[in-house]
Structure formats: C-alpha cells, structure tokens
Amino acid sequence: MAGNLLARSVHDLTAAAWFGGSLMGAIGLNGAAAEARDPAERTRLSSRGWMKWAPIQTAAFAAHLAADLAIAWENKERIAKQDSVGADTIYKTAVTLAGAAVTLYAGVLGKKVEKLAGQGAEGATEPRAGASGELQSAQKQLKALQWAIPVFAAWVIVLGAKHGEMQRPVNVLKGCLLYTSRCV
Image (cartoon, one colour):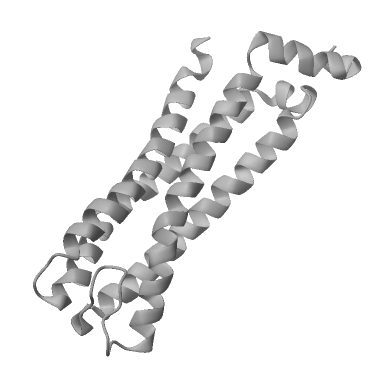
C-alpha cells in the first residue's frame, strides 16, 4: 500500500500546483496587473510575476513526470493486463504532454510580451490601441492560453482520479474477467 504513496502524492500535488498556479495567475496576477496606472507597468508586472512562478512550475512538471514514471513502473502488469488501463495511460500521458507544451508555449509568448512591455497595454493579455502587431498577437494568444492551461491541468487531475478508480478491487476484477487469459 505505501509503495506508491509518495509517487501518488507528488503526482497529485504537482498537478494541483499546475492547476492552481495557472488559475491564480490568470485571475489574480493578470487581474491585479491590469489595474496598474501606467500602461507599461501592466505587462511588466504580469510578466515578472509569471517569470517568478516559472521555476516552480518547471520543477512541478519534472516531479510530476517522475511520479508518473514511478506509478507506471509499479503498475506495469496492471497496465498491460487490465482492460483499458493501457489505453487510458497512453491517453493521460498525451494530455499531460500536450498541456505541458501549451504551458511552455505560453511561457515563450510571455517572454515576448515582457520584451515589448514598454509599448503598454490595457491588461496583461489585452492589447492597447497602437501597440505593435507582434505584441497584440502575443497578448491575444496568451488570453486564450491562460484559460486552456487550467483546462489541461484539470483534465490530468480527472484522468488521475479515473486511474485511481480503476484500481479499486471490483474494477480490477471486472477488467481482468473480460480478458481472463491476460490476468492469469
């Protein structure tokens, strides 16, 4: 029972950090930065806050992936034998990697916005009239991504819960009964 406790805890806590950090940034940090009096400060302050969060988020992703590997290793036979666990594991991995890629791309866009902060903005993700096309494009993309990122994180959390439910003895039994020869 305790064999996967650390890995599962790290897995869930890092997904929670991804979810909570992205929501707090989109709502709290970007919302507060939009209230700055100086239009140039709006993007600068938001960018600085996100850059302070970036190392924590990167560490959380690394720890999440390490925990995923540990959990998969511990459950390799169940992944191979129990009905739909292997497919769900591949699906969850794909969602996690896609979410990580979206988060990384948002960081790239954030660096671009930070570089162009002197142009000013209505808000962290709301362009100001007269801003360059480069800044406007980056901000518009970030506006969508700031909401896509917590969706990916929540999706990973839900898929993790589904995996947990699949480990309940009654579900393992059902999954093995469908493919009796695989579970023997």
